[in-house]
Image 1: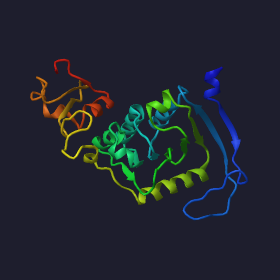
Image 2: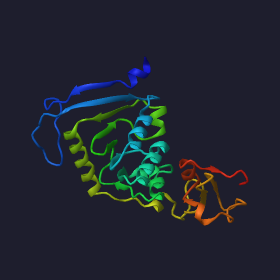
Image 3: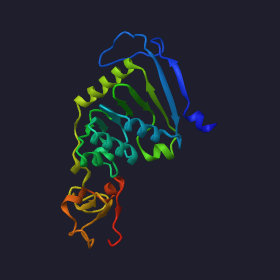
Image 4: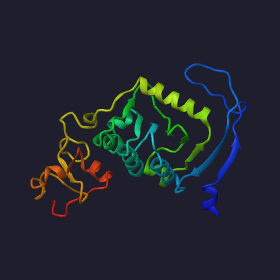
Amino acid sequence: MQESFLRHTMRIALCGCLLSLMVGTLHAAEPLSPARIAVYFSPNGGATEAVVRELNAAQTQVLMQAYSFTSAPIAKALVEAYKRGVKILAVLDKSNETAKYSAATFLYNFGLQPLIDAEHAIAHSKVLVIDSTTIITGSFNFTKAAEEKNAENMLVIKDAPELVQAYEATIRLHAGHSHPYQRQAALGSSGTSAVTGRGNGEVHGNKHSKVYHVPNCPGYTGMRSASIVTFATEAEAQQAGYHKAKNCP
């Protein structure tokens, strides 16, 4: 009963009398196409699972706006989409540039270039637009806390092309005044990590075994270069699914 309620899919007509779209400058409201909408509620309502499922189905592009972004499953799904050739545009709030556990560094390490929107007091939007067909939005931040602890709501909207156009336009608008994420901004003034005290690039993960080593680990210097994935901090390696070698002190 609860599961069906949390995953309830509603067929509704979004009419211009209920919703006006504003993109950059004001435009007259126009009737919108009927849309299919699924709603998820936190805590533990399946929102993260729904986001990952939609990202796993992405084929061409993903446009993202995020305030707080620390969800490892969602970050991994974005990286996997990127590896499949999906174009990723991620526009994040400036807090992600200095946060200890931001997924921005995780994305950056895999070749994605997140953008930081620092033009506002808070860039508070939480939006994904996938393949110009699916919109994900609501109060739900892309975080573990939003899934497990907070009272949140999230909508997955399909078959709403006018709404897609509006969201894509505003995401690109914010991307236009954003700057590229800089990983070193998450480090202290001495160049050491605020999380582990180790400098940038000193955590080496084995991409085959998913085990990471730090400089004082016995196996650190013996790792094959072709197998090494470099992380700025231990927290970043753990977020990527790696665990510390057992022979490390």
